[in-house]
Length: 416
Image 1 (cartoon, rainbow, N blue to C red):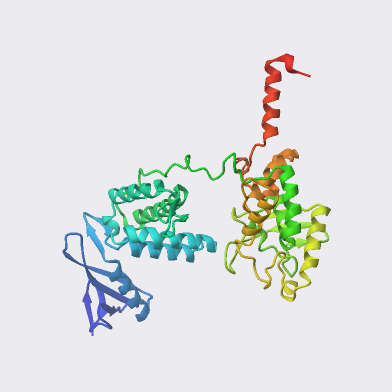
Image 2 (cartoon, rainbow, N blue to C red):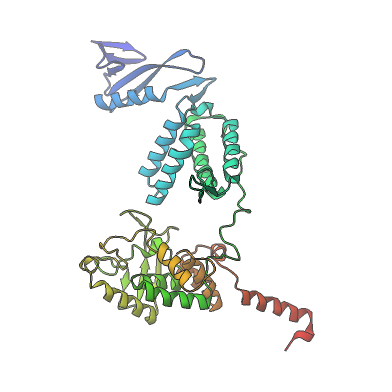
């Protein structure tokens, strides 16, 4: 029968435990929760257009949240592990994390660091002191030696060591989560507030002795040796050196098909996808920009020679990709790692370079060739001049020539 309760007209008995059918339509759910003082409080919600199953899901969610009301503020006793996992899932579903590499980075940070260290705490119990203590523990790991001797006495990577850049990346994810918790759970204070990143000054990525960039002469020798030792990677290497494109932008390029990225007749290369790992491809580049690059005839000729080599393997021949693997699928992220080391040693470089050297070398060579800054960034895809400078390495002769010009201004006797 219909009864009046909770300022509504509902059917008695309940359709299910905690769920009543409303005369006005839909359902009303009611449950008890405990607040921060341990007192029970009744919570109801009206769902005018919900089905019985939808009402059940809403009631289950309400019970799982276990929200507590204290001093007029809504606070959550949800475990940080549960909140972090839920926030991660929502960001993936909303495409806030777009690349497979980004998903892997978040998953690793959560599973190996954040949840093991902080996941047992309720969100409203996670305080600045907890994060500060964890940060202090990480400082010890950063200070640990990068290499340690194993049982056989060999120097291997020390699992206790973490680089400051790795730790800062983990902290950036934690800050996203705690900021979201403050907004969604009405927490009093962000526990990460006031905690700075670790300094990377004593841990340079590249040094003068190992700049991970090639000079003009080295680039010429490197390309020639790559063609000799690894002809299947020659065109990809030259295209990377000539344009500064990231390997993640080179791997998904399509040479044919309805959405081909190479216009062979016009000599145009369209960079509009990014591949990080597996078979997943992200629409757009790392910076979200799409690029149109007009290639010179010399580079188009190198790419045509490369395509001719693919005809010898059926799976590569059938693939639409410009740089397919032997199976016709995307090349692995590490496909150039070993070839770059081998070629570096073969031409006598003091320190092997990585595939990232292609982007850095392009910026240096373009500067030596006096390519306009706007043109240079339109090719490499750098959003700002600051980023282009970040990927540049001042060459020895450039420095000497620059200082010489200043000396001539100071001491006129040196002119001529």
